[in-house]
Image (cartoon, rainbow, N blue to C red):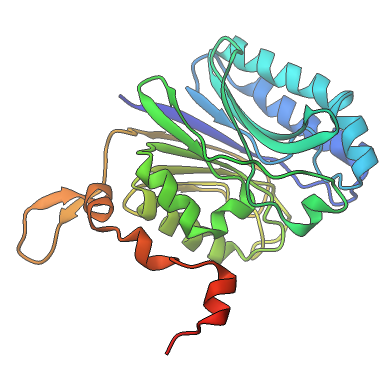
Length: 287
């Protein structure tokens, strides 16, 4: 069954002010308002979309629980009007004084299906933003598919994607900033991760305003093809995919066709890759 995917790439608020955050969110709401019911089965928004461009801990937390919370409510309500599932990443209070970067998937009724707290935090997320890391990899059922998440910096860790592969994900939702990464590397990285996991990777980011840095919201297929790529400017990207269509190729020269992820999973040797802790490796270096 095909899934119609719409990915929003809003302008990044370079001023890092509340006024700039409001302008970014207004762009998102305007683009959602321009969509029609059933244009999309799934709408993907970027990282920290409830506090875009904000970094000071006090400002992030205050905005997230006031204007940012109202913005998220409007986004969820609009998704329900469009009869579209919607997914995004936001700064949110987990419990007590613990704050996390949480990706959430809402269904067509606006009900939360699942969530994932970002495991691999950047230094800036820890200080000054005051975020705490998540503690588990998440794979959940949505419709007839298995959905996983990878938020921004998670994309740099192949071990994390090996875990997602083992969980049999069909779709990987990737809300991100990646404001200083080259456009070329972003595309290559996402293509490799899609092949690694045998899944469709859906990346939503911000337009930085330059052609060679950031941007590149995209959809990468399990065979590594880019099915749609936004450039460096604000854009709405729409692509239809069949998550059940996998990457099949010859197991080796002259051998029968097989599904790529099944082939890789059946040959993994995880105990060989990092059998010791960093301290153990330092004490007993390779000979």
